[in-house]
Length: 143
Image (cartoon, rainbow, N blue to C red):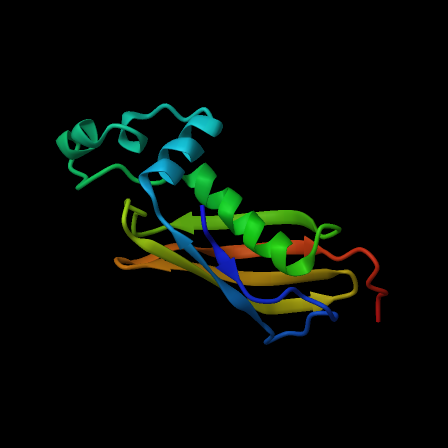
């Protein structure tokens, strides 16, 4: 799976800082593998025919895969010592195979060793995911 992201966080985050975008190709394999890995065996995540019978044009990504991608986006930016303290997301437009999701983030709070990042994951249908992530930044001294 090819995903691209430019740069990593090198200095203490400040309110208003924007994280570099992460582009995620939404493949059938990513959707099915994410569902299986998270033990979500709902047919709408792996069987296109049954998904269509239930009103969806195709299979779609489950929330646990989305949650993992959001976590990866934050930890890739802040580094391996960052700790995801709270992830609060809401799903919107589904991620279907053949689409692309672009994750973007903006620091909305930064105090001491904690930053809160507002995250949006957009695809061709609109916002797939919106929410916030609170991340602990070891090594950052409180101001």
